[in-house]
Amino acid sequence: MAKKMKPLTAAEAKWVEQLEDLLAKCPSKRIGAFTVGDDYITLYDRSFDSEIDKLQDGHGGGCDFAVAVDSLKCELGTVQFPFSVHSTAG
Image 1: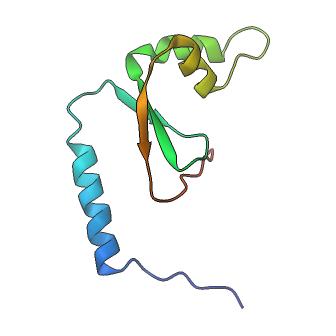
Image 2: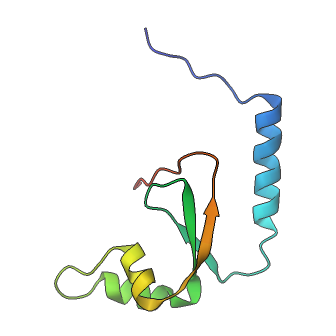
């Protein structure tokens, strides 16, 4: 028998709402984020997006997003989560 998902508890739903409210208050359009499937997200400077795209589309297969961010030295930091943040493509 398949396991059934339980809905969020009231406390969980409140936490999610507060998190979304806080994220909506970001003081800048410059901050972007990505993950490679860890328990944190990496923040980077979105003003480098065109340079990141060029590295990813480069001759010889390009490179991964995280490698491009590292190469351009445009990482701003990380945000730790209390759970895994899976990296998927959609």
